[in-house]
Amino acid sequence: MNSIHYPIIIMLLFLIVGVSNPVIKKKFDNIEKSILMSTFFVAIALAFYTFLYVNIEGPFFYNFGNWGRKFGIEFAIDGFSSLLSLLILILSAIIVWYSFRDIGHEMDDENFISYYTIVFLLIFSMLGITFSNDLFNIYVFMEILSLTSCGIISIKHKRVNFLASFRYLILNTLGSLSFFFGIALLYMVTGHLNIVEMNIAIQEVWQVTPTNILLATGFMFIGLAIKSALFPMHVWLPDAHSSAPSPSSALLSGLVVKVYIFTMAKIVFNVLGKEISQALDIDLFLSIFAAISMIMGSIFAIAQKDIKRMLAYSSVAQIGYMFLGIGIATELGLAAGFFHIFSHALMKSALFLSAGAIIYKKDLRDISRFDGLGYELPISMSVFTIAALGMIGIPGIVGFMSKFYLAEAVILAGKPYYVVVILLSSFLNAVYYLPIIISAFIKKDPDREKILEIDDIPRSMYTSMIIIGFCMILFGMFPNLLMNTIINVVPTFIN
Image: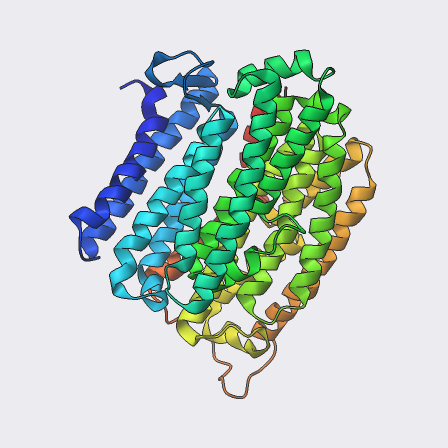
């Protein structure tokens, strides 16, 4: 079989399994678990082979029905999209494996099949956004992603979940409309929806219609900022992440927001191109919003008492780092931003899964009651600690390397004042993460014996966390395993 078909086969696998699940299976059992995990194993194998193929043979385009890119649907399979798809599949597989035991604590049995149907369609739409090479189809997959994201929030059928999902739906609908209006403005001046053709046309007309292009980019930025929860357009995120089941929170924060950030990078560098983006000061605009988000997200996180709301606001701050990488508008800056997409996906997934384990075992969300918890749940709290220290920027963990690469990029770009923002954000991260670590491992709770014991939680839950914890240290100690690959693909990404 020709390997250029593999990305399509991967998406079809998730679409077919997701849609057929409720029809074929009425009860969630071990057979169903085997079907779901087998789908992941096959998809990961195909994605890995595609990644190797792209790195050896180079990027390629997939045209459906052999239509030309001016009229047909086209996927662009390049170095970073193949790498991002691999991250989506591997991390989703780990989260789904974790969820098999945790999800029974979160929702009623009759909702299990529906939940995994929604999750598989969510993964399908994320892959669609990652591969699509025309803006209209990106918009279509965004709508699917918005609806499925809403579904994994509201699946618990509780009032707080319905309110959070309704707020998510309203705000993300506004984001979709804003993004769609931006597409319409660009189509008006270029006559194309395909990203390659649109970029060629924009090079010819942007000096004649700069206002249209600037407005279009502004509308698309607002839409993507809402969907990715960039401050101050983040208001849906705290309620959505804190009320959703813990595996849903890990998917939303660890993966879903990343594809929207990747789409922003496509618009800046693939649609407009680096020179036009800088001429219209779009890079400056992105950098300013990124810096504000990095600080304000951390400030709001400090004030939280609920562990999952604190992690949600922390995500707002971390999203700023990724937008800063785009805003720097250099190869190293974009590479650093892409690196942080991966490092944050690992760290935030680990944090939400650790918090989920605490809620599963102790039904505990109040940070002030974490005293001595590290002795009762040492694996969960150790993974939480590793991820938290990575968020702060402690050497040896993948989060430190993200900040190091970003700091190096802003200095080389002649913008050293952003180093101050990075350091300040790291300090604020320490303000709300270190007290939790100290409380869990140093403080003593009179109601808990200070005797170390292995977490009394299902094996699938703590092994999932251990795998992610190992990856955080591996890429923290050997960042070039990932960074070299990203640096190699970035020059082909920036036009």
